[in-house]
Structure formats: C-alpha cells, structure tokens
Image (cartoon, rainbow, N blue to C red; front, side, top):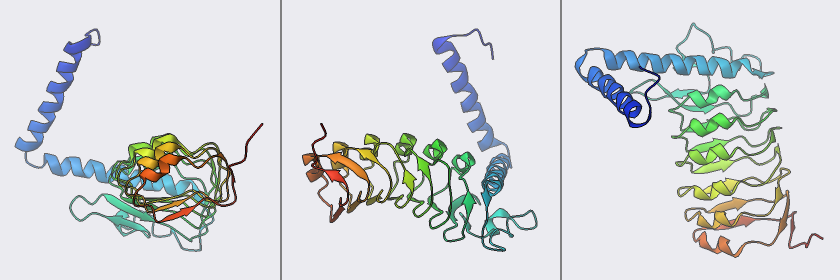
Length: 245
C-alpha cells in the first residue's frame, strides 16, 4: 500500500483489503479452518506467557500446561466446542504468586476469568480491556496493587467485577458506571481513595455494591438512587461524610 496516500483514499484501500479477506474466506476451501488454527495458536501462546509469570502453585497444579496435551485440556482452561478458543480460565486457590501477564488480553474469546484466592502481585494489566466478551472478572484475595485500569470499561458485557481484598489504590474510575449489565461490583478491602462516583447510579442492573474498608471520602451521591435494582450496599469503614479541610 502506498504510504503517501491520505484520508479517504487510504481508508478505501483498507476497506477493500478487508473485503477481499472476507470474500476469500467464503470462496477458498479451508481458509476459515486456517484462520481458526491461527486463533488457537494465539490462545496457546498467551496461556504459556501467563504461566511464565506465575510461580509458587500447589505441586503439580500447572503440570498439565505443556505440549503433550492440547491447551483445552490444561487444568483450569475451558474452551468453546466450535472454535476451540479459551472461554474460561479458572485458577483460584492454587497459591499462585507472580503477576498477571498482559498476554491475558489475547484471549479474546474469554468470558470468565477467576484467579482469586492466590498470592498475585503487580498491577492489573490494562490489556484486560481487550476482553470484550468477558462476563465474570474475579481477582479477589490477592496482593494486587496500582489503579483499577479504566480500560476495563471496554468490557461492556461484564456481569461481575470482584476485586476485594487486594492493595488497589487510586480512585474508583467513573467509567465503571457504563456497565449496563453489571450485577455485582465488589471493591471492598483495598486502599481506594476519593469519592464514590455518581456514575455508579447508572448501573440499572446492579444488585450488589461493596466498597467497604477503603479510604473513600465525601458524601454518598444521591445519584445512587438510580441503581433501582440495588439490594445490598456495603460502604462501612470509610471516611464518608467527613469534611476534609
């Protein structure tokens, strides 16, 4: 492609290229199978990268993660039947230490991620924002630090965000108010500061909001009344209602 092209001309050429690839996948036998194989390899490499940053698991916990088995047969890995892509990663309670690799963002078919009740450190990688199909995001009872990545707001299908009992810092991102399907948001027992974003009142499907045991300040926003399905609200052990001079 001529790199000197600008504006609509370049866009037109890109669109034509995309269209050609789609037509090729429909006309050439085996092309879709080839594309699926590429996706499978992407998932396998991503899982190995994740393993490389995890240490200290129970003896034998990740022994199955090797080339003698298809990655869909590895412990804690669930794949979809049609495309053999990773749809769930369940590695809770294995005494895993280390950190969560940014390669997690390459598991683009992932719907459930659970690495809770381990010893993970480091930050939550911003690459989780690539997991557009993600529904359950559970990393509670670890030692994760840093801010909650705002990129998480790209995962619009999330039903559960469970990050309690870590060492997360910074403010609660107001972008978390964009989750129209979210049922549970648990950020308790961290080191979060600032106020409760009024945008959380937009969470019309929310039933559980747990923000207790942080360092939150200010007033409880009236906008929370917009979360009409809220049944359980936990805000204790903060500094809410305290006037800061």
